[in-house]
Amino acid sequence: MRTTGPPERSRGKGSPFLYRRTAYIAYGADPRFSYCLYVPDEIRRICVYVHGTYRDAASYRDQLTDFAVRNQVLLICPLFPAGLIDTQDVENYKLLRYRDIGFDRILLGMVDEIRQRYAVRVERFMLGGFSGGAQFAHRFAYFYAKHLTALSLAAPGRVTLLNESLDWWPGIRDAERRFGRAIDRPALRALPIQLLVGENDDDDIRIAEGDPWWAPGANLAGATRRERLAALYGQYQRLGCKATLEVIKDCGHEWPPLRDATIRFFEAHLSAAS
Image: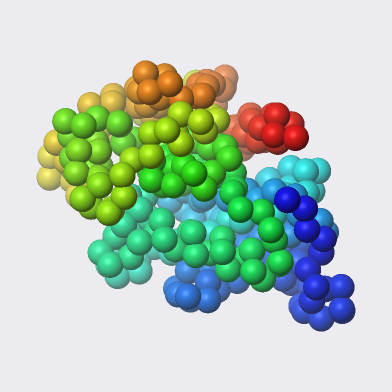
């Protein structure tokens, strides 16, 4: 599980902007995408944290850096740009697939590329996300839970229920046909899952027919983020997942007040794993 600092740095080679708090780095297989990192001197674990719709990936990296330093965690914050094909599109990554782009495959490829770049021998990783990032993260976990060691979901706006009577995205009836992969329920049951939402995150975000996001069952989970996360938590409980739900006081739809709870969850997972 442990690896020392990258060979390039030990030989005095490589830009300092590629270590510790890095610049944005283009993804080699598709430079439309990039990531920023925190690379500690010694790497014991990997954590991926996915941005919301504003795509402020470096902000999440910076707010989680103390956690990464303290726990020798390689922190990966991918950047999935808006307007990749449709210049007006800001949603693309949240459903994992958009036109011919597979964001699930892109993330897995990024992690593999980073492992090779920094000579990391850690296979699985922690995954988290806020808002749109949490939409991506929980859908990613349905298919790739075996790749994960812990999952933190902070205030997703639209959730995919484990409902076999609804098609993707409100449900999963046709998910295997769409993705060529089955929902991995046994791995989900074994995965520690945190659900976080602000006490005041109660805007009405119901989806009207005619909206680009509309699909039958789009509002089945509720009208607000709190209601939708509670519905998702109930489904995870019925599946037998190791899930917890935490409502943060004096908090609306904002990530900084959720930060400490996110870090506590990840660190508790690391302690239990040790």
